[in-house]
Length: 80
Image 1 (cartoon, one colour):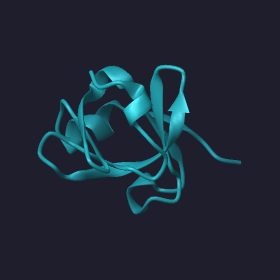
Image 2 (image 1 turned 90 degrees about the horizontal axis):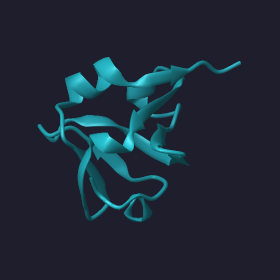
Image 3 (image 1 turned 45 degrees about the vertical axis):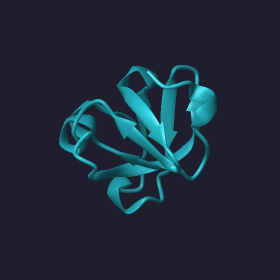
Image 4 (image 1 turned 60 degrees about the vertical axis):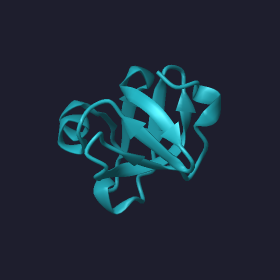
């Protein structure tokens, strides 16, 4: 797991297959909160546990699972 201090707002999140998952909105506890305005978010905030992070490479957070697996596992917080 990468140090969550390395994860910053607006970083791209990709799966281990380097496919886009989302964009970092911030860190909440032990989860990465993804922006709801990202095209992949369908207007909702999604959350990924920090244990899902393999590494931080430049301005990208790379997960230890594929993008499809991450989307299957992410938590959702509805807006409104």
